[in-house]
Image (cartoon, rainbow, N blue to C red; front, side, top):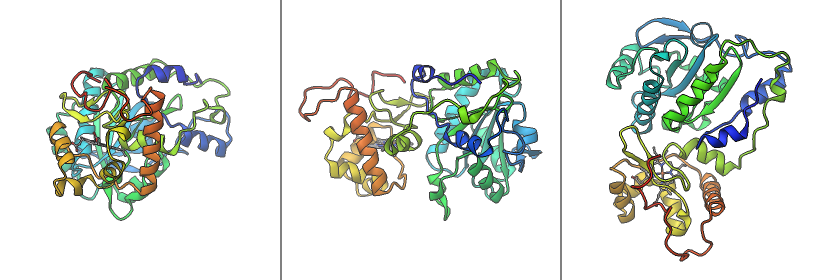
Length: 342
Ligand code: HEC
């Protein structure tokens, strides 16, 4: 297996990569050379938005390069953005989608998302051929998500909005899987998928062993949280992220701890929805500046917030944020929302 080099990853602006779940799996199976096959992936039955019955392993991923995400049509805020982003990726890949790349969006609200509901959704988002929306039994889908490392325990009790904003890109035949963000720059994502296609169907190398899979830098808890929960809409020092129609997704959080009162920041991360309700002036001004797209309440715990703030501070310092809050004008700050494109 060709190791995924950090070098390559760094070159790809903001790749989110967590190989830990598969590396962990390989260690437990201890089978050198084994590709994750039917014995790893649950072959659950699913139904497509066109009403066709399929099996997850046999029909959807076996010998294929795939992009898989989890969504639900009643999702009020982030899924529509996610879908729009993936639509961009689909456009860039063009007619390869459905031929040598397959895209799957699996509902985590399958009782509501019946095939006809998904079909209407694909029409709304002008989803082209080769990208299937799928539903099935709730328990099967949860099993699948757990196996793919894409289940957030905070969802228990029906808090679907806590679902993790990530997707998987994989090549089942070579056994390479990678977690990415649906808010990855669509060109970067298309390149990732495209480059994986490069050796798709090549037989796996002898001795391929996930126990010797590329070492993955251990992320601090704050960085992992940021990557999985925030990087959909925010960068630190990378400028404001823009959506497919150039709408602003969220402010750059570079040096944000120096720009805002700590207590305001903590509360805003914890319950932005309440602050909008209360018409907190700064929250309202931000809401207006960001095209009325509200920052979602991500059900963060106090500990999450502490770790996130620590990470944002550390990353800002790494990028040269001054220690002194009055450290002079800063050209990369969060208020600079117009210059950068991605
Ligand atoms: C779906 C997009 C989205 C996600 C995900 C998101 N945010 Fe936001 N965030 C926004 C938007 C948009 C704003 C600007 C205010 C508004 O319009 O609500 C914002 C504002 C903020 C602000 C205030 C910035 C300022 O200038 O004062 C902070 C801090 C913040 N977000 C932190 C986070 C953190 C930490 C996470 C992850 C745990 C996160 N956000 C996840 C969209 C998002």
